[in-house]
Length: 311
Image 1 (tube, rainbow, N blue to C red):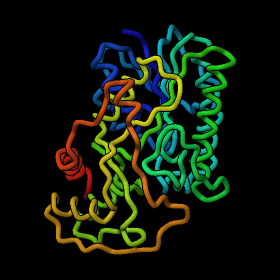
Image 2: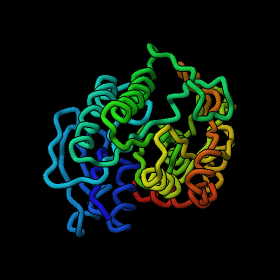
Image 3: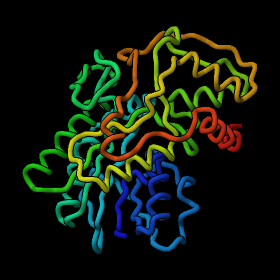
């Protein structure tokens, strides 16, 4: 079935990708330096046939013994707290890390997939967001370190495809949730769930009218796998088009937890997107993919996980 290098493999999405690839008969080389990844996310994989782990910073030259069929670059801080606290690392892993992993794919004649993001659309002026929208991004704002790193990563990926003939794929990932999210990563799902479980005030930035759409992690990694195995070179949105306001989302989590936590409103951070919803027409048509897990079901699984890690 082939051998895959997954960078950021101890992270939230990376660890679920490791699970998926192993379950489908692939060998997996998981690479992570634990800046934001967690060894607990992959501890169940050690000792499994076909799994190996390398602790390494992908912004340095990468050497992997033996053949590789796939390279998936998922190493990156991926939440506002992370990339505001680690702006240089975020820029480096999106630029240098992308360059180094593309080099590995070129040398090994491997198929390459870069984890891009809906953040390349910035605070969008088009709704929902289609792949041909170029975005409304502030390159020098506080979020620019993540947005521009990912936009650069897409450009570098396409350059390696056009100039070197590397088989490349670009997935633009929209808001995703599920088990193994970090409690304090600053995103709304872990923040709301942990606050609701503790009956602490649930923090909403702005008036809560800004919208998001949330895709459960098992649906997302299935879409990524299908994209990798397809022939599509250009960016493809993978996410859930079911849109709701942040306030509605907080109220749904509070209901599922059975919490009495109050909602607490704070100022909206600079450049925070007001709307976010993927147009997944391309993924439906090209990959036969769309999300399957209902929000309440996915949230309940996530809440059950957080009950085990929230003190």
